[in-house]
Length: 344
Image (cartoon, rainbow, N blue to C red; front, side):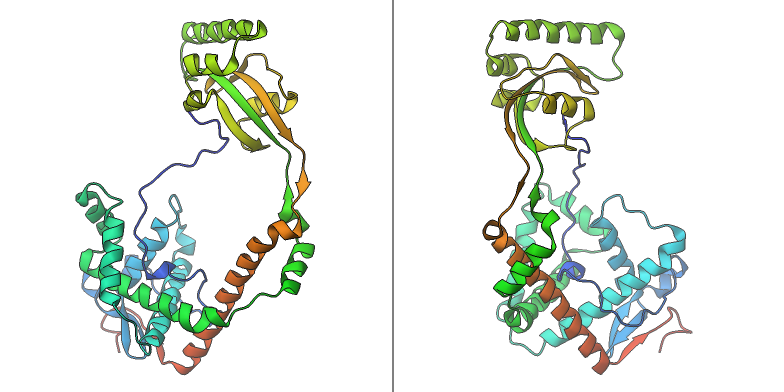
């Protein structure tokens, strides 16, 4: 049972590919529309949709890139009118990654194959059943061989960024202070409360008799609490929420994190106070407030490390974009139509 207002569904993580190696988008260069992959014939999948200094990017690469982008954003749907724009973005990211990879080939990178094998082994450990891992690869049009190839490329680009771009980035105290002063809302901590609860769970679709029985049990427990019964003990013995193991303790939370009836009751209490029985979609709750934290402004000293990290990432991304833009000016980049007519 989750009290959170918007619980996040869990899904099996898709293995990372080169598309996610740098936290930046393709540089602001001319965007060339590409045909929808739905227009590709099966025979066209190995034909190039682009070349970067003679290295081909195939229709299959483009299709795989789209699958990866979608897999990393579960639930994302691309409307038909935006499909070509989405594919153009994927192609431009492939071109960006190819330019970075080609630049990395000028560097000496030791044990690249071993690093790729170690990465594969590490990711495989997350899947107790090897078949599940293979199925996840198949969903994005890959097998173990192509995954290893992508891992080598990713590791090479990461090495390039870490050795030739990132070391040149610095963040000054003045920049940190300026960011702090210009973004006060980012350092304001909202009011929080710490609460425990006892839940007598019942499905929202349950019948009237079942709901009545659950409410009567909750009211009985409430009467015991009024008579000074131990809240944590009753929670451990009766609550159907996983928090029962901690005596019902839910920790600290701000407004907007819990379902409205629960939140309203919790924030209406004073420390030590116990609510009446509160009904939500999960069943019937009794809430006890343990503590309340007033809104506060995080100090510059406390925020300094995180601000520096944030600014470093922003500067690194900008430097990568500048690096790619310069490389693209010097490179021969051809965007092609799929099939015999467009191939060159």
